[in-house]
Image (cartoon, rainbow, N blue to C red):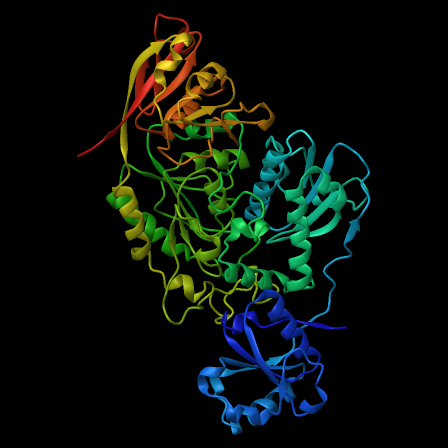
Length: 618
């Protein structure tokens, strides 16, 4: 039987709806409305109403419209699969006095491709390892979102869960401690190796699942997979070229954003505010010193979203980017502007200080984004990468919208001119990423971005730059290990970064303080602390979050300067950053961090305490 797509995008949520035509299409629409609870089906209309006694809602003749008041229904959906017939029905309804604006003329869109040949395994093989494969399609942003699901699952079952990620950018994900194996999607074979197989881009579908085995390992995961099967089968029914558009609409209805799409019903314990994770080798930080970016604050700018998409409806005019850079340089000469990305073939930026397009590795790109005070670009992979690096972006939206793809910490811009699409044009057609504007095919850039003038964007950026906080750092003491308890204050927010420090945790754990351990193995988590996957060069926490930040591995790091800078970033003003020093002479005469030089101690071993202070005034 053919299946038909319910016109969610044309129907208001919680509205009263009349279905015209009590046939196969109309029956499916009634079932969809009931299963989703999206709208209320008042009744159906059909010329052959007397033969429709088994229809799921009451069926009346078309003349019933004459008896209904204007506030008794919001829409009439013409549920037939013939455009000619639909237009004839509409004319008849208009003759009967129905309001034109309430009639939805629909040539039923057939969903003719099965979602997948899902394999549901009812037996449990008894193996003590639950093996999951996630095949991630799409771009960089899609891959990053998949890691949130993986990280959550791995925290739940650290010792008994194997998760393999099949993804195009293998190098970026090979260093993540919660992913067991990273392979190319081209190498994926649907065999019996895995207990669960998930695949997707914007959303994930279950291709294979051993429900009984999942249930044995985790009732919560079992509920999650059971729900995924249910809502895709009952709401979406099929996975085809239009399924991303339907899923996007479903996200809007539920008030979810891109981060939450793979956990859309909120069953697993993560949401849009959950900590991220991204790691890069510390050697990549040399890109900063090699290009003179250690002494100055700098902004990164990227003008493209994908080198393969020359006509993306996300793009912002290059000349607008250049004008924006010119205004920033004129008012903030001390802030360098660095152009990044795969290519600058879309046009020259004359007002940047450094052009590194095509001259960095992926990890060096991470290092640049991590340490820029702001990233400016169109919504795309680098905006999401900056979020996973715990930084701030100025994001320009075109085809996509901030409600789905925006982050609270960012400066988000989308033109609100009346001529622009209310909800963007993502997934309107099959080639939306490279088809330009659906309403203006002759323009290189869509009207929704060209309407957003550089002066408007600059106003938001200048407001941010004017409010950039400045801090001073003071080396307050060097204490011994037996004096750790001196640091603890009742109710303090405490972070232990990269393992060790058990004595510290024992000292502070009973005093009501909140302790978060950032490391790479939740199985090693002390009982009195909360665990998060973390990396000393990129700690997944907001600026100025903790009263006390403790680290016992600074001298073992390849680049202690940047590691200490990250520890200081998450320390509150008036808070203390405490790092263990076992040989102060290793730093030479001085240790320079954040523009401040700390003199080395004669004492060889102890906790070096640094106090952070917010500077006020000019």
